Amino acid sequence: MPALMTSTIRVKDREKLQDYLQQVKALGAQYGAEMLFSGPAQGPIAGDQDHDLVVIVRFPTTEDIDALFGSEAYAPLLDLREAAADMVILKYQDAA
View 1 (cartoon, rainbow, N blue to C red):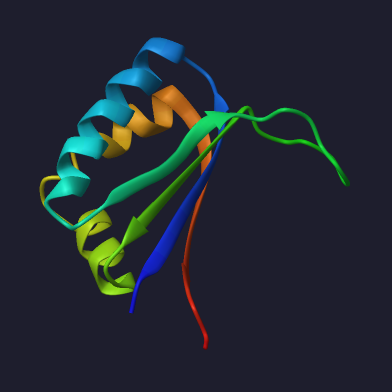
View 2 (cartoon, helix red, strand yellow):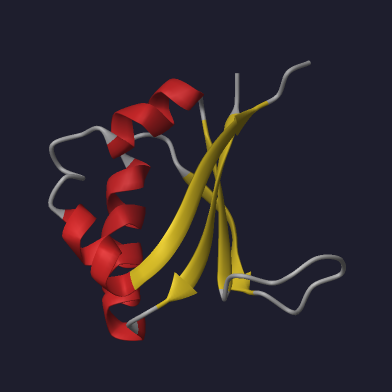
């Protein structure tokens, strides 16, 4: 069943973030990732804005999301991700 992954991102280093996003996008393709949206926040409708960017990606299953983030190929990207930005990464699957 299709699954979504969202990342809300507070940028620390724009160059490192671009490097991270390029590398994870290429790796994600191996797990069926399809970028649906990537862009800056335009301001809150309700509540407080605590991030600069949002990324939304569709995967075939939540297992594919877990496989990507648990892979040996992703492990070297952890330090780059931490240096680039503060991120909240969540996965979702339709309950219907």
